Image (cartoon, rainbow, N blue to C red; front, side, top):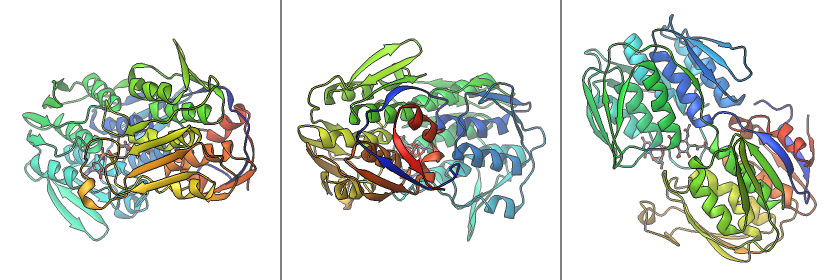
Length: 442
Ligand code: EPU
């Protein structure tokens, strides 16, 4: 899990002040590593964070015969797929439940080997997280999908062929599935209802460097002309805007001032608008963004999470802590995942006033409204948080718990913090750099 102990004791009330540096986006880097499987020659990926999700994908590539080595620059990976081979069941099964990335191995492995086996998937428990779109997409390309007790076996007896795909919801993963499968499928693929997150655009950059032909049209339509051969790529990964937003939220909630090196405005426009509306301030620099609390009261906001270019679901959890300090009632309507408020129970225990509702509050009706999911949060502030013993439920909720403990009066013990190292590189070192007062157990 990347940490010696799994528990951190935080003495709250100290503003986080200083500078931290971002690396590449978790949600791009792991997919870029999978894309290397499609090349006939080695790839170079730069700006790779040292997080456990990257380590899992590295191991999964290795069991499929990809040689993954560290390059000369810190955060540089060399990925050599020349000897790709089928993995032994036990080697793949060892990774069951550890990540959601294995489902994206399907297209590349079907192209390279004609078969693929995918173990049961993991990832944060923030909803049901089905893979029906993925399987439907793969079937459209000609894959034969055989669900087995321990995973899914796939084959492509007649090869993979371009397809017309229309996603019922602009899923990030399913869009990536289409891209990674279509680039080497025979013929033309048309994808309607695609997700267009910046991480997806960066994956398209990578695939184009490899030799793919991909057109991004208006209205979420992506066209891919399959090619017979792709080469390796050399790419510096896009920065992690989710990590940037998390540290920004930490700066605001702790009355702090954090320069997030590597953060860029264009991928964070929607976050920056909300940050300003809550009462936060920021300065855009060539090499990053300074986020700080400029003084004065924080203000309540109504947020509706959405696919890009909307307000990302991954941004709401860290920001909720600042909303507990805001003067008035804020609403967060979560429309991407049906169960992303598991983290608020601990905040209520710490003194926050938060109620979760099944109705679609504060915005448009969403697909969860009729389905009895607790997906709207009403946060009444300002409340003072006090220290408590809390347990991290998921990656972003975990970062939110850290912020809560950092702002709370007294001492908090946050357990299960290993989950946070799935997506935040060296967060313990960064907390130290920013002046947090804490001890690690172990
Ligand atoms: N969905 C389906 N069927 C599918 C696929 C998705 O119903 O086959 C639904 C999901 O259940 C969810 C919605 O579609 O309600 C959106 O899911 P999406 O496929 O877009 O999410 P994902 O690809 O599984 C990625 C990130 C998430 C991020 C979301 C949204 C990775 C590894 N994960 O997940 O990141 O929240 O896109 O931007 O890229 C995180 O970093 O903490 C995280 C959860």
